[in-house]
Length: 119
Image 1 (tube, helix red, strand yellow):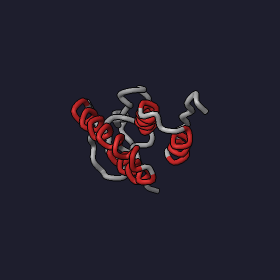
Image 2 (tube, helix red, strand yellow; image 1 turned 30 degrees about the horizontal axis):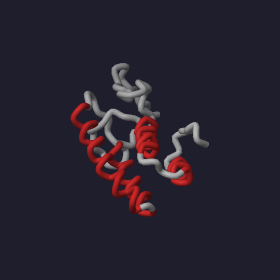
Image 3 (cartoon, helix red, strand yellow; image 1 turned 120 degrees about the horizontal axis):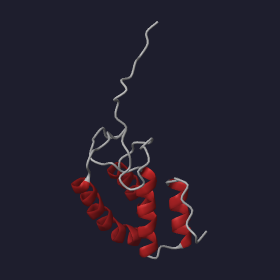
């Protein structure tokens, strides 16, 4: 029987915002691609949200200390959990005064148990 032993020093990465272990390593760049697809239903929102996301991704790349490898793109550029990234996007939707329906739909597609006070 073959046994796998993992060294005690095996690294785990924590989110730079919430400081919790990143258990779902899907990077903000890949999530942004999904958000861009979702936002095609809302061209005006996409036009305003897109540049903000681009600037935020650049900031995250520039400030990342240690990065975890994304399970989708296999790049290691970020140390941010999907929950914190989705919370940031929801905050941007609030700033952009997106309708309640849009925010609710965002939560349905990118469900990370975020429940804003408006619902």
